[in-house]
Amino acid sequence: MVVLLSIWFVVSYLLGIVFVEPLNQFHLGGFPVGFWFAQQGAIFVFIILTFVYAFAMDRIDRRHGVENSPTPGRSRGSLETVE
Image (cartoon, rainbow, N blue to C red):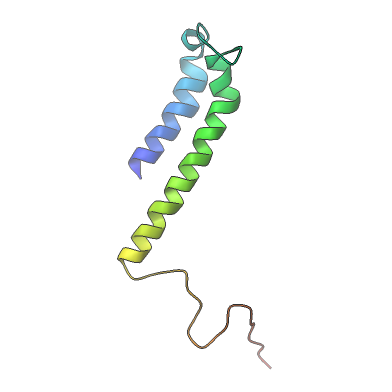
């Protein structure tokens, strides 16, 4: 998970703020790359990171025998009422 946090830091802080001026020398789709990373690129990377994190957590859950399954004896849509 340190890798995901590092990617988040590089994209959000370094590419979107610190290195924006050198990146603005290049253009992507008619826009400066620094501006693109700050406005669009970071959002795309964050969405990808969210899916990678969810996939990794599911894999860890399966490895340890904890899965998203309903509680035994109950159907998925039922709610128990206590009287």
